[in-house]
Structure formats: C-alpha cells, structure tokens
Length: 138
Image 1 (cartoon, rainbow, N blue to C red):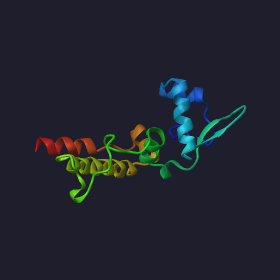
Image 2 (spheres, one colour):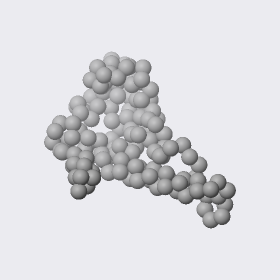
Image 3 (tube, rainbow, N blue to C red):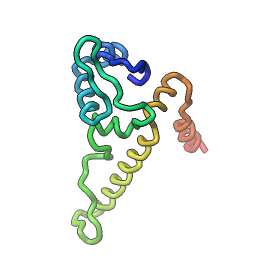
Image 4 (tube, rainbow, N blue to C red):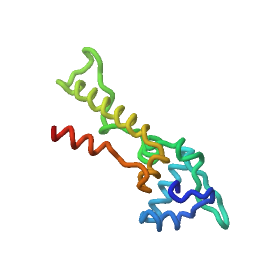
C-alpha cells in the first residue's frame, strides 16, 4: 500500500496481484493490521484498504507484532532470577533469548514503512549486510 499510496483505498485483489500473496492469506494479514490500527478499510465501490497514518509513523516492529504477535526469540518462559532456577543453566540461557528478542524489537523499530518504500524504490541502500559481512571477514 505504501509503495502505491495515492490516498485512495486499494482492493484486496489489487494488493494480492501486486504482492503475489494468495488473497485469503492477505485478507488475514489485513485484518490483523486493521485490528492493530495500522490500516483502515472502506466498503463499497472503490473500497479497499489505506494506511491509517503516514508510512513514516509506522515501523516494522508494529507490523510484525500485528501479524505474528509479540516479537520474541523462541517460545520460552521468562527467566528466573537469583536462586529460583531449578534447571541447571536454563535460566541463564533464557536471559540470552529474552535479550535477543529485545534487540530484534529495537532493530525493527528503527525501520519505518517509509524507509522500506525508499529501499524498494532503490533510493536508499541497505548497509547493514555489508557491515556484517565486512566484520566477519576482518
């Protein structure tokens, strides 16, 4: 929607055509996004979906959370603290997973939908992979 935003609603059929996603699956995604307040729908002729606010105000963490639920690394319980852990080493590992989930959420918050539009249009290069690859080689 953000790539072709003209302020007019876009039909599910049109979105399915553009994205290559099956229409029933896309409808589920749009309902989740609507429930999270990220998109609005308009019924009737010329109806469809529009972003509920500007793409610069919507970040990837909001989108992922709306569609997939809370952003976590694994499906683990909260770590115990102090002497409460009765599973050798497990609580220390749970803290690492909780920390990783926090880093993922923060990283995704750093990308707005507007950023993704710029990247898709080739107006903004992604330097993260080059930095990671360079640090692994060095």
